[in-house]
Image 1 (cartoon, helix red, strand yellow):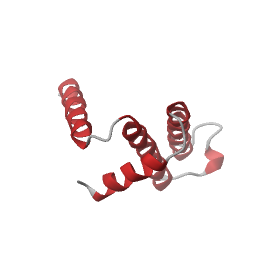
Image 2 (cartoon, one colour):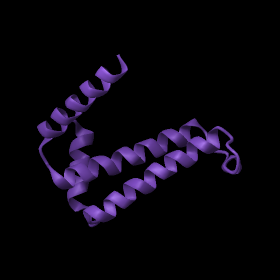
Image 3 (spheres, one colour):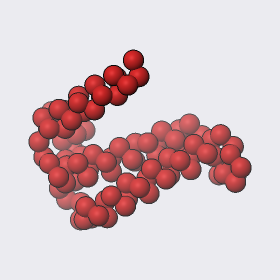
Image 4 (tube, helix red, strand yellow):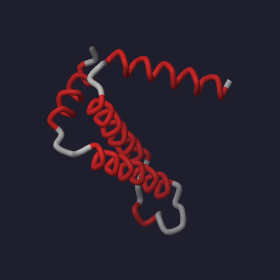
Length: 97
């Protein structure tokens, strides 16, 4: 098992937030990705933050962590995660090819 996923699973089991709170946190993190992108692109009203590609990448990782932690709150089965990843990537691949 990947050491990062194992660490994330352990931490997820210790996370006191409820599913609802984690879902809201995920929305918050996605919003922070959007803010970083808007700032990076100097969008009107967002350029004052002066965020860059590194900020966007960090916000993406925050989003990934919350999403995976939410998954691990629902399932500790690594195989299920991989199966779902494969299923969703196949669906995405079919759409773009």
